Image (cartoon, rainbow, N blue to C red; front, side, top):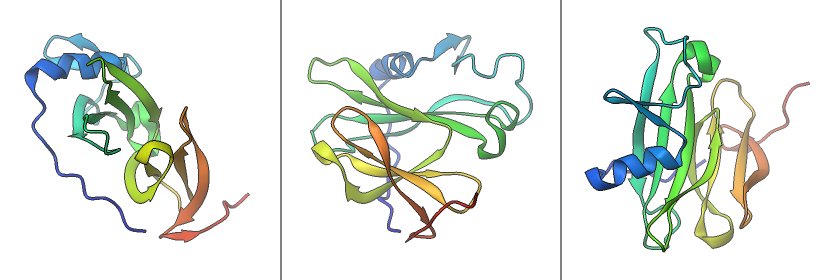
Length: 151
């Protein structure tokens, strides 16, 4: 499996609040949180951060990946991600979210969106593809090869 390498970019301060808000986060002091881990924060918890900020689908506008982590609330995967996209009207729109470690692939769906390998524990993981309305299951892979989950 060949993944797209995503170089971290500096997120303009003027965009940060809009990105977190579109992903469903709320400010708690200096941190952004979803509330998914309320009461379960431990040493493993990490509040929201913008992990990726760049144009993923080639439309000339940025997308952002926001992550929140914590083994107690997100299990063995340890993180949840939200993908949001800047629209032509300058607002941010949620595209997808999942309990996974996203890896963007060279294969693409509708509108130039890269397929997303949903990384995490286990060997046979899902790859989703944008169909123009939502990310939907496309295939399962393990170490770059097709697979079937064990039952």
